[in-house]
Image (cartoon, rainbow, N blue to C red; front, side, top):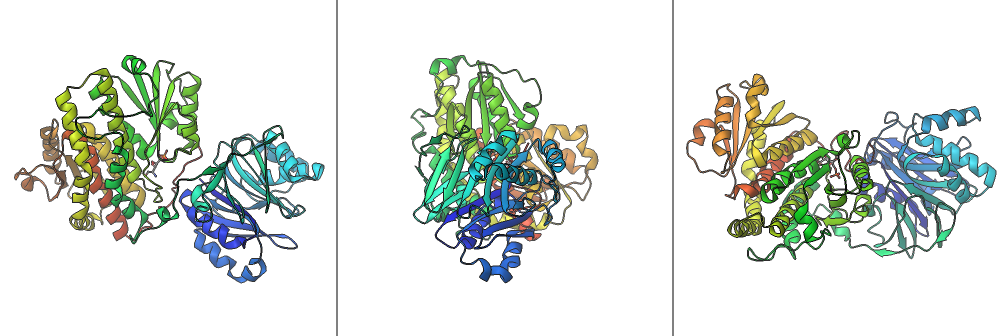
Length: 614
Ligand code: AGP
C-alpha cells in the first residue's frame, strides 16, 4: 500500500517521478504528490485521486521545476485520514525545509505526536507520517546532519516504514531507510533511484540494491553510502534484475487484466519446464529443501494466505490431503496471527502470496518460523520480504501482474500446488503410478485447453453482458471447485462491485436458498467427476426457486439444457485438474461484466495490489 519513488542524479527529475508513480499506481491511487528541489527551495505539489490529477495540477509549474534533478514522490492508499490534499504526501516539517514520503504505518504515532506537539510542532494532517517529518526535523536541528537525524529518529519510531527524506539545507542529498516495508535502490550512470518496487525504475536501469531493514542510505548524484543501524558503513551488493520493461506494457489489450488472463497458458508452460518433463518422469522440485525422510514423516501442514492466494491454498489442501494423506489446515493470515496457533518444528508451514509483501501473511510466517516450523513460500516475487523468510522457496514466475485483480498469479499458485502435492505423493508412494501418470499427462495438456477457452471467449462475453444488470450473483460448487466458486465470486466483487458469493452447493439449502427468486443468477460449477450428480441436484433445488441458472461445465449431457438458461462449455479434463480450467471463464465473466459496466478494471476502487498494512 502506498508507493514511493525518489531520484538523485543528472537527468530532469519530474518525468522520472511521475512515470515511476504511474508504475506504482497498483499500490494505491487515493492521492499523489511530489517534492522537487529547486535552487532556492523544495517545492511540494499534491493532488487527490489518480495520478492524472497530479499531472494536471503540475502543468502551471512545469517551467519552475523542469530543470530540477532531485526529488521524491508518493502515491497513497489512505490508512490514516481521508484522501485529501492535506493528508497527501509529501509531508513537511513546520518550516517547510524538510520533506518526507512514507509507505507503511507508524504504530506509535499518537504518542510521538503528543510529545512533538508539547515541544511546539503544529500538525496539519491526520496522517501518521507527519510525525516523521517533525521528528526528523527536530533531530536535524540538533545534529545539522540529515543522515544522523534519520538514524536518531528511526530509533524512536515503531511500526513499518519505507522513508525518503530531503532537507533544503543539504540540497544534493536524499536519505532513505526502511523497516518491514520494501525499498529498492536502482543504480545507473545517470544517478540513483529509490522506490517501493522495481517497475518504478526498470526502464532506466536493471541494476539494483535491496536495502535491508534498519539500513540508512545517503544518496547524492555521484555517491551512495549505506550504513547499518549503528551507523557503520556496509558495502552494498548490486544485483542484476531479471526484468524487461516490456512486461509492463498492455501489449494491445484494453486492460492489463485481459492481457494477464491471456498469458495463463504460457504461465503454466513456464512453471512446468524443468519440473514436469513427461507423464512418465518424476516431478523435480529441488526448491523443496526438506529431506525425503522428513517429508515422509510430516504429520501436519498449515497453509496461510489472504484473498485469491487463500483460495489457491484451499485447492492445495484438497490436493495434498487427497494425494498424500497429510492433514492440511488452511487459514487466513489475518486470523492466524491473533490466536494461539499450534505450530512447531514438526509442522510444515506454507505461505502463499503473489506479492510476497502482504503484511498479515508476512507476520504469520515470522510467527511460525519463530516456533521452529520449516517455511515454504509460494510467491511470484522471489525478491520479496516473504521470500527472504523462506526455508524452501517455490517461485511461480508468472511475470509481473499489474492488474489489482489477481488472475495469472492464481493459476501459477495452483500449478505449484499440483507440483508440490504430486512431488510429495511420489516420495511417500501414496498414489498409484497409473493415476500419477494420468494426472501428469492431463497437466501437460492444460495450456492448450485454456487456449481453447480463450479462443471462444466471445460466448463468455455474451453471457457476461446478459447478466451485467444483476445486483447479486451466487456461485455454487462442491469439493475441489468450492474454492473456484469463492475465487469467481471474489473476482466479480472486486472489479464490478456486484455482491457475489460462493457457496458449497450442499449448503444452499441451509440458508442462502432463501435469497433465490427470478432475479438471482446462480452459476453452478458442474465438472464431470465424483460430485457431478450432487451439484446437479443442488442446481435443481435452485431452479425450483426460479433462480436464473447458469452452468459452467465440461459435461455433454443434453438434459442440462432443460435446467440451465445458459451453458458455458469448457474442454473435458480430469476432475482433479478442473479448478485450473473452471476458473478461466469465471475470470472472463468478471472482466467482461466490469468492462461492460464501465468500471476501472485494473484499478478498482478502495483496493491496492500489495496490502502492506495489517
Ligand atoms: C486478488 O484479486 C486480490 N487483489 C487480493 O485478494 C489478493 O489476493 C490478496 O490481497 C493477497 O495478496 P498476495 O497474494 O499478494 O499476498
